Image (cartoon, rainbow, N blue to C red; front, side, top):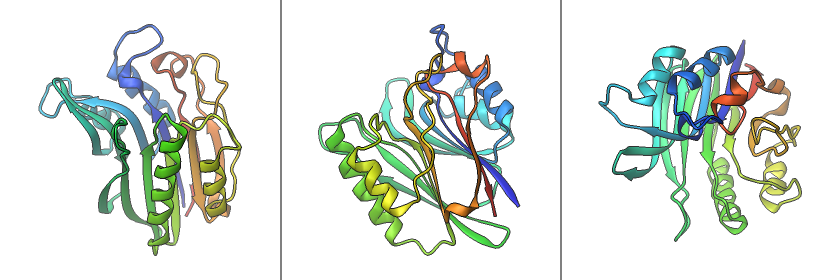
Length: 228
């Protein structure tokens, strides 16, 4: 059984034209047609008629799991996970570092074709020392899982392939190809990542590049097909 997963930093739904359009992000997600989607930089207002998460849920036929890290005057901001698959357990993990923007992990468990899967979706910080502490926390979470398969995905903000956070993660996961996702109009950096364990479950990994995705956000979506 193949499952399609994706990670996408939607930049508050603000595109290269500086126009904010949840509907445009929804159209990109419809192009991808993924079963499980990790989103970063999501701004949403529960109960508002133009709630971003409600728009994306309806467009993709998924259920949204919010993972907000900030509460502001105009609503919530942070991560989200969209899933067509039935989720059996949800765990919100705070990985914030003092005096830096709050960060978190959405951890879920699900079963696909009798395979127990643990998913960790996150958005790491901008400072190297911050990311090192956050990856250490991620690795400690992975040590406790009893799942048959693990998916780790999100925007890791790691600009250098030889950085310690990536080296540490590659001790846990087999290194996957670094695919450039940022900036969307001319991608040079692989900030967005998907890791699968065991690695032989990964069927394909690609960047979703279309005229729409190059405009809708400052990141391109990263898409993987996984065999369960």
